[in-house]
Image (cartoon, rainbow, N blue to C red; front, side):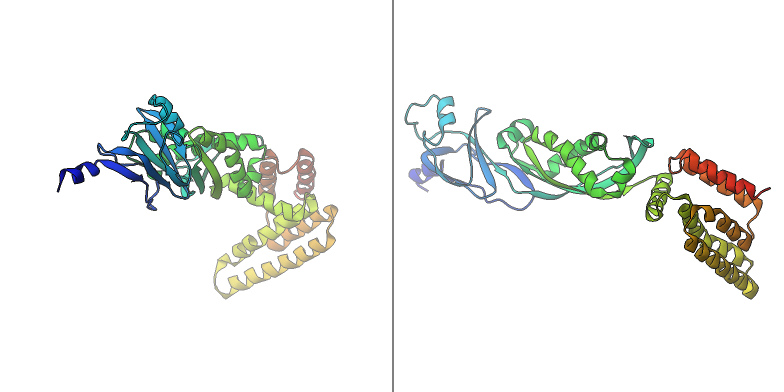
Length: 346
């Protein structure tokens, strides 16, 4: 190999990055002591940005296209190096490429239940998980704040930091949304939108743009899940107390039938079937009535048909009291139903 061949290999004519789909966000062009030719070519592909860095200072940024490197196309670098109209060839500068493609299906989740404030319940604990998409929007900021002088920087390197941002801002997102927790848990789209509004400025601080976010699951404590189920059931029948008792009666039929048939054998099965039929008839009459004033007699008939004891009436009162304490029943509704039930014990 001749001397001229050796010298030619020390100069760089074309600077480019053939990006691989491996989650790389930033990549430093390997200079290895080589220098860039005056009039050299910089190739920046679609979904890429290139940044020249001189002695640790970010200089010129190039978007997609083919660029000829001169003092006209490198104004900031020309200033930093005190070049006049032309610079001597060759020159040294670090060149970093950044991928601006969307980084999709990035996972987030709550390893442990987190506590959030709520107007209805004071404080609740929840688990949630989903995914999000982001891209590099400001390569200069991302370089100075995150990737630095590393040869490459990937989504795996920043994953922990972004997950931490999500967890840190969940409580604030729920609070700023103004949405009641039970409604938020039942509407995951609203939850995701609240998270995006809260997190987008935090991503921008490090040069990223949050493109989208999903909430795939919200897990509630068991006691809150029961309240949510009852809220959904009440939503189907409205707030009328008569209809509420109809709904409760319908929920009780399978349990009554199961208890009646617990004796086993043909006789037990017949008893369970008979109780179920009797309860079904009473329920049909109750639904036909459709009036609050008829709800209590129908409920009493159910108790009589199924052989409910006074202890069952007290259990019902306790359940209604629990619903009142959790805000599902008003004090007036509870008092009215309490008076009706206590009459059955006289």
